[in-house]
Image (tube, rainbow, N blue to C red; front, side, top):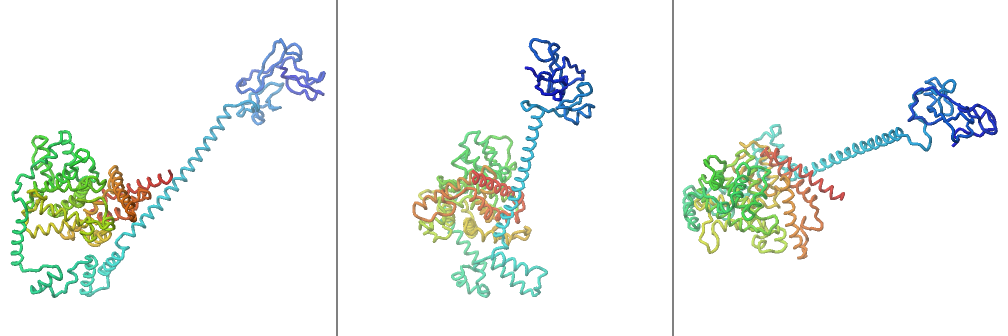
Length: 631
């Protein structure tokens, strides 16, 4: 190719360095030879190659020797700084010698690609993308934080609806408290006394003693009226003692089995002894007193080892402590073990003279009477409630009397016995035998407690056994314990939840323990049993998820039955409509969290160990809800 041949009409056109400046026969004459000084031009960035020959003035390049020279291209500014002149993109100095202008910018032909330029463009694009991503990330995070703040504000406002001071009951109690403060204008002690009485009436609710005429109980002659029309028995000390003696004889006459198991506390359960050594070892570690007090205890670890006996084993380990742990160690042939090496409640030393052997025979039958087919209300749930209640009791630092603790733990063991898997609403709406027997009032709770004491006092039909582990207790004391256990089981009726929360909040919340008497401490224990019964949303994962699934499975089974019978489907029982995250978020926000906040005012350790778990679970279900909505 004749690179340097150019057509012309006049000499003025032929003014390039390789041309002579003359136009001959319509073509610019080419110099025979152009020599450039060696200035170290960079061949890789040179855009023009000068090719000249020495023979025919450039008219014919075929078969001739040529010299190749390189000329650097440069912008005007760089060329000027190098002391040259820029002409048609070429930087030259005097006598057509190329200048070394150290070009920073290379002007490339349209059909060539410069790697440096491509790198700069790619870098710029990458920087832009990173910048855009950072802007999006910051904006997104800001939006999420704002949404979280709004959610927390909303949740806080929802919780306020269930605090004591925002209910009619709470407003009334708080108003009275404001009048009883030292800065109150009340000065007359009688006014203060009357206000305290009004407060007591509010808190006690339907306490029948509040409505008895004041002079009626002052005279022994009014015993008949008090007994028949007020349901209260008043007697002289002599009459009380005589009545107690007769009652004790009658009670012992109807209680089967008089032999006391002197060594029963030290016996190992046959259910434990029948397991292999590896299972026994695992249970020995799981059922230690210290491990059982942990809020993170996983009841499913026990049922995985012995699916048939979770309630019996856990009740034995908690109620039978420290004898149960000592018996397990002896069964495993641990050397140099003593009873004093183990912690426990030591209920065998109570004045109640508990028949320990009969107690666990009784709990064995109670476990049998839990319906195994229930996904939720089964013996595993009962075992879980015992352990959870034990954990709460341990958080109180031994503030309760041992006799009260024994009664509440027995109540925990029996609190859902014979549960049919369908709730009170279903029983009432279907006119079930249970609802008709208990007049629609706390149907299941009444059945649980009634069955528990039928077994205890009457034993099993057609069997000569002794299930009354309190047979040595005097009748008045037995009546007191029986009343407390029944009251505790009835306390688990969910329909009474908000009134119970308000009651404990007003009477015990924030008070020092020395101001909480024995009766109020029992009420706190019953409240703790109720909270243990609804504790699943306050447990860590995986227990949280396992219990939620089991609970909803039972609810959905009830909903299916209600649909089949043409009844209105109960809340959270419609498998086609109920959303798991929503059901849990509402339950935690309005029931579980406010309840544990109140308990934390009585037992501060609850605030340290349990409330953070509840908050994490709320965030977990919030995340699950968001994933479902965006799926």
